[in-house]
Length: 480
Image (cartoon, rainbow, N blue to C red):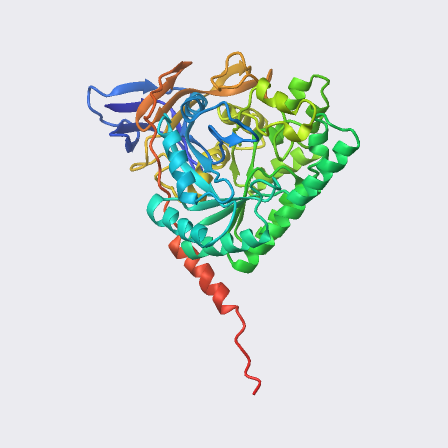
């Protein structure tokens, strides 16, 4: 089956131009004006619309077992919702239990993901350390196309990685040409504050942000960045939510360190007042980590995106319904952490980014697709509209509008953190692997049509960094 998209404005991260696109065999084969195509090609009229690379969400948790329950969104429903919003690929997380072999956990997640209807890949978390973890990291990079490893600096007593684990894993990632990523919150600080607040009788959702202050994120970000600096490995910080952490990224990048930061739409728009809602259900529905922050942090994050200090946007899509959130009715530390957003990310960022003048359309493409593809080494297979790239495309109607609501969204969760927000700019068509999967509200998905995407390691750049680090090591002094 072949497709031709005519009459639209093609927007890549570097340039916008009027052009037609011809797709055959799941790949973009030609981009240009007045293309000659087979007479039986399906024609999509994109007049008055933008044609952009499909979104890549580098941070989702589909079907995640967490805090005594399992996320309500599985790999089929989650990727279907993504396609409805213009996102054509996710990078999810394999999270082994402490002492569980990494390869065993990886095989479990691969099995769960077989029903995905959009392309997907995996980061793998390092939650403990011994020689088997060292070996499994090598297998994952060399055989399975995993080039990033996640480290939770929070969740003491569960999956928290201490400094010893961080040092060993970061060092192994350097050897393999893989990217360490971190959830930056000081887990010990959070734990102690949780106990203090509960002892003081603060048991409701309002305790959640109080137990995870901006300083907890800033300290952890600094610690991870400094550790990466000593080892000589690049670092990616997920869901940056505070000016504190952003300042650490800016400092490191200013010193020439390869540090990347990710922002979530929720942290750009929602403030911590949601946790003080008298309705427990509404307050609990917003519980995620890091929590939503005071408005001054939102302003800083927008500036981070505008300046290039933050390079990507994601959702941390991890859905729990009201009955699951109710587990923490009498103890906020037991509320499952997570919110949705995989369907709404692009519309939110277009409305409040491009629509307000904070972002250009090209910058929008960069932070929703291209930069992620580059950082995680799948560019130009993904993240760009050009011949040879995968035909993952969103046709964007800048005039389309809707009010976001849990009653009408595709996401498999009973609450939407953007409830009631009116967005202007929506996906009119989403093409995944050369197949039209969404058209003006008509979602045409099939289980199992998503592909697992391997991501190669970074041998050249990492080897250069390792060479520099080695050259800086002091030589032994003979004192005889």
